[in-house]
Image 1 (cartoon, one colour):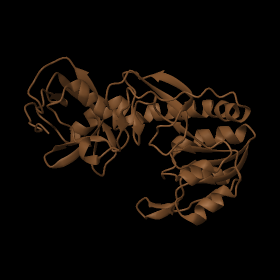
Image 2: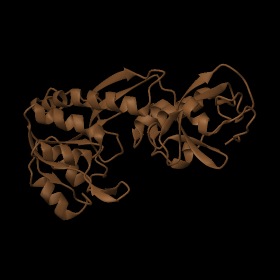
Image 3: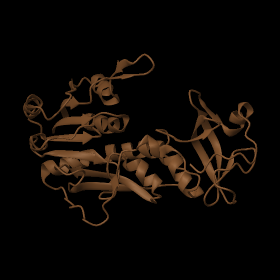
Image 4: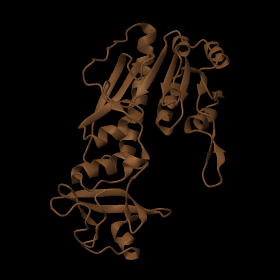
Length: 306
């Protein structure tokens, strides 16, 4: 098939590689423009942009797909289908309609649960027992289109957004070729999303990354895992911001936000939470023992309820 690929972050790379490896003609790759990054603020190409160039595929980086010129250039590619994976722009109807078989999206949730920007984070933070990937025909609504294929995976106790990200990225790559071929030969089974069970995975606000110690230890553990590696759940100690990179629930009670020993066991609204890996602002990650050598924390220190 003649395919236009539209994607930007690491999550999209396995799907691009899968399509290219299957022998489809990649007419062009669309990605977000290079952005300033790092301490030197040097412009950096997106992961998809970089890989597409390595594969020898033309890359386009329009600032907006809503401009008439961009729409016309996209339509002129005369694609059989466009595959969209975390592209980063809302596509106008004229773009959705341009390919022969429309546009399909690789979405990291079991639709209609967790439509929107942060489905992996939200599934972990909500305590879902499973998640997955849907290959969806795109329409004007936010992740409302019919589903062509889906697969699921259990969310294990130690899963983080980082670990599930990689699993789901590979899962999307495994599904994509079957999905686009089924559209081309007319064998696709189209599943309209039910109206029941719709939830929205709103973009993560950095303000919600602050740990509220009045929450249960289980809820705090979900927040830590759901916000790892970015933006990272955090608390403040003596005016210093400390990210919590890993921890474990403890079956013990104590005042919320108070250290229960001198090894970073923190009382919660229900139960307690032991910090096992943390990171001070501007410093590297450290296990609790290494952190405490330079920043001793005695029992009875109040970190505050929020």
